[in-house]
Length: 310
Image (cartoon, rainbow, N blue to C red):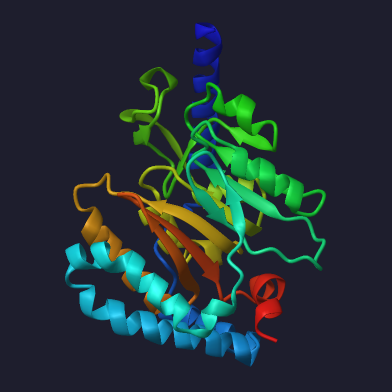
């Protein structure tokens, strides 16, 4: 067993090293403001008027509440859940039927389209010995839907996730590098610790390993990288530059960093300035379990939003 583990670690290390030196630097900064402006104009012109108006109403509500708090990260963090609830209930966003699935201890939101039988793509970053949500989604989504999961803790997670899709025993972040990850080894029985390990960047993961440019559901509970990965989905940033689109996101926003409240304020500012994702629900358990929906991609809008705004 020990020999197998060493072999597995060596194989993953060699794989990540290959991608690090044989692919473009996917972690470069966002492109020019001209690219960003054209992307935002495309977002405005491509979508039905009703969807744009729904987003604008929600965005004004959230901006009125949250912009004054961006310089007060402590208060922003503590009032975030209630602010999101207010703006969903007081705007046309209340039309959205926020359905979903459960795993052992939380709820994952997912908007379904009962008339579109196109197979879906589900990405899981951070399996955490729990695939109940993925198993339920597999029974509800169209036949042929694809599931890909990544977690640096191989033991048990591999067997569990392989029942629904393809498992990768790697840590996924914003860069390919060797650094610390906050993981839950089986021997700690539910507790976490920092371990130094190889990380592969999320762009390489999606373009070279899963090869999934259009992602219906992105389940992210990988203990910290969400602060870097979500901004990469912003207008003109790395996901746009590589032709990647994500429709629905369930992200657990953690408080493991010393400066997590300041990083959280930067994340919210980026989401509001991009005008792409709407934050539709938050469950606070020390962390913020957050559901985001893409209003800036035409294919996402047609597949998941148009049914509510006819």
